[in-house]
Image (cartoon, rainbow, N blue to C red):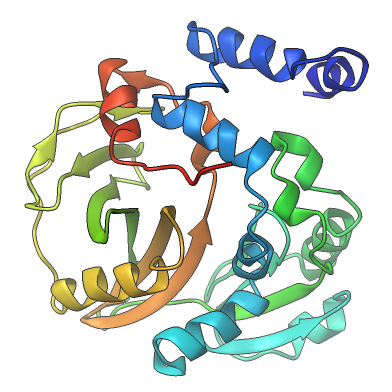
Length: 285
């Protein structure tokens, strides 16, 4: 990525970005007339300067946005936030929790009951993350202005101790109408697979990154409410991915994402890159 960023600085026309795109996806990037989903992600990264991207990408400030838009009852309990973290602070927190930086995509650290924990290593890694400018990694400018902080949230589990399911809603707003594509990850503990569904919850015949096992969708309690909330949070954007957790019917906000996979998601078959792109109506420059 550093090499391509260097090319962008010394050569015109975003040449470094275009070379990296072609290397990843095997077709040329069009910024003048983007059609595919990945092309439109890159168009957004270069041309769309919506200040809400920064607000909602900040894992701490996004909590305020969620509270205002849909209510604080959907927020995961916050145990700590600050400009740094140390082992003693972590040791003083009760129960199971997740430690993360607010300005990047991880890695995060989970502290679980009956599992060995190296609090010094966790603190060192998180503090190191705070020194790294995540915006450079994939050219997502909206991460750069985020004041870097640490947050610790409660680890979510169901009544039987199971992991909370993660629901990723790709929300497209076009001509006053909203449409959702759902991404689900299955079998994380044995080798993850991902299945996509349309708004009618029919399986979509493509995959990204990992195998699609074509798992029929089973609606959890309050699923329709999750869709409603995802659309509400995304209503100010032409496209946004909104993630929720569902814990025995209780809904919790995860995050909002504006450039999934950095715009290099390898759709298989590739035609679905265009299929997803057709749902996204970019703003006029």
